[in-house]
Length: 570
Image (cartoon, rainbow, N blue to C red; front, side, top):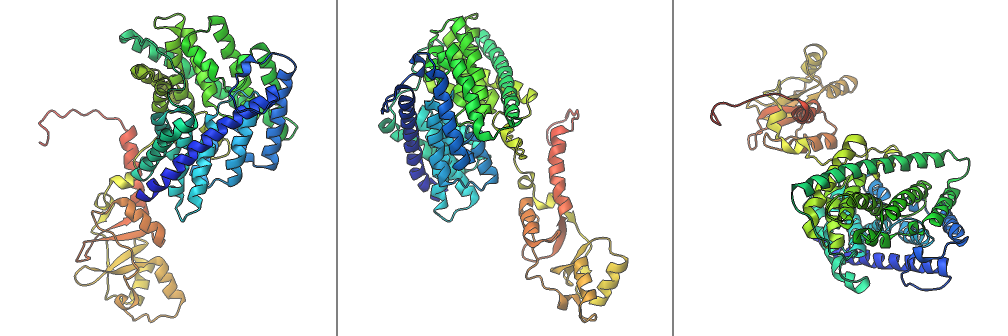
């Protein structure tokens, strides 16, 4: 933990620097594509006059991305978070230098040319690549590389959005797949470093400065939950539509390199109807939170943003999902807010928290992210209510999140629910077979061969001396070797066996330790002995270890009614 924490100081600064570079690249690309000038000043693409260029520029940008993906790295396709998860779980957390360079470049081209994406997915992939590359410079394990990869990703997200708490929760709920000090502490340190240097790179204050009146009372909580349920359905529709569209592109009789260009045609056509769909759309989020958009404008934004985003992302271009999701969830919340007390802007905020929770299966991240983005921490209880409502609908009606579905389609199924390993909960004495059958060390090899040929009920037996202490373990494979090879059949087991390499465990050992011993030694059974005397008191097999899993599953699914009428302990 101390080693990784020290390394996280560097990774956190690197993630913040990568975020600054990505934002400048997006601004540069936007100015080059739409105004034909070299500048890194931020521009709102919705202010660009509608014309033929609105249809052509997204196509040009997508053609560039297709070439970069085909001849550079295919990993730059998509929104980045699923690729980061897959690398963590199945790629030993090893990202290449090529990805670290091409992902921000491709994302800048995509967003700068009008792609309806945000910068969060790309920065998670880019920051993660920085952490992974730094870790690969040292002799570290895959788990340690994962910690630094996630630290870089969380630092990048913090630098862009100024949301350190949400970045930490995103790491825990989506990326780490564990809750351990050796990963949690370094990630927090990297996030805090990125937050500390953010004023030098990007600025201070919330990304969306608003001052909302937070409603109170049971009606507000009930409305937040109801909105969360509605937004959860929206998240399901969006996720299913995305992968239907992606399947449609896979059936096209052309190379995938050309798919982004086809998707960008829809982006251009959508922008001709509503230019607000172009680019990341942070101005749209601000307008929704301010409550400045009328019902017609919000409805049009919701419809057109959903269409262009789903088609563009389904085509395999490069860009993030978080900003579009915030717009879509916020737009639905804003529509509801026009008909209920509290203000359209406030309910847009609840919709943003809910959509992130329902689509990404990260309820705590969604709730805190919405509150941190606006510094409206008074709204956090209602954000949680909306997020949990969306999360509940999502897990009941959709098998996977919008992130893990993409990985599952590659044949890798991910279980996002955290649980404690049952082998870490139970001691050996709870699973072992006590007082096992043993063989005497005085038996000859010949007698043992005859024993296994006739009366043996088990595949292996502990061999003990006159005091019951372990001498070794004899198995059917030993007997077969003795039968085929030259050996003195009159030799005793004490002379033929040695316990020097025999793995053993103690009754109070965690069962997981024995599981590791079985894997490392290749033996199917491990003798359990008393400490000091080495007297055999039990034996633990692979079958016994499986009982631990079955016991946990029984506790989860087997229902029973029991009322203890007496006093506790009687």
